[in-house]
Length: 216
Image (tube, rainbow, N blue to C red; front, side, top):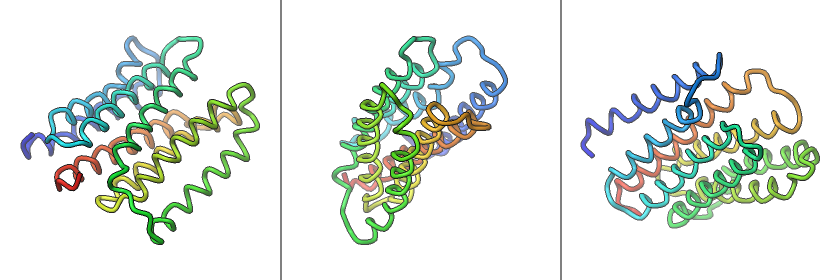
């Protein structure tokens, strides 16, 4: 992948993402689910075309699983939420496995993780009691995304991208949980999708920059 292609990635990604956010805010349309997943699938393609390295496999799988989750959540399936939850759990597992070699527990990184603990405590206190029969799947999902976020926060190189991506992913999912189980949020679509797309882009960029340094 040459420098020109790398520079075009943000342009195409945000064009796809913004088109979906704006269009889906006003009406439903054919292939909306595929449009939702399109920015993430684009990143997956860019990952496959990128330089070789161990993270390429896990990043590609994480993005494909995420796109699958996007499609499932936007589908008309009866159990679309639980299917989407499973797909994103797989995505977070793939991210987490990819981040393991970069993680190092230090006092500074532990301090960076404190806000994450605060968010999780709030979700446990506010959301979990409202999840009824979905309590167990939600707990398992929270454990998986927490592991992914911690490993991203503990990354020693290109940590700002991974740190931002991890926190924004947790925030996006927390907004979904609040909206589904607790209270209807104003501008829920805009808040969830904007944080989600930024999170995925930050994780992708952090991983690609890490791969470029060959510290993998």
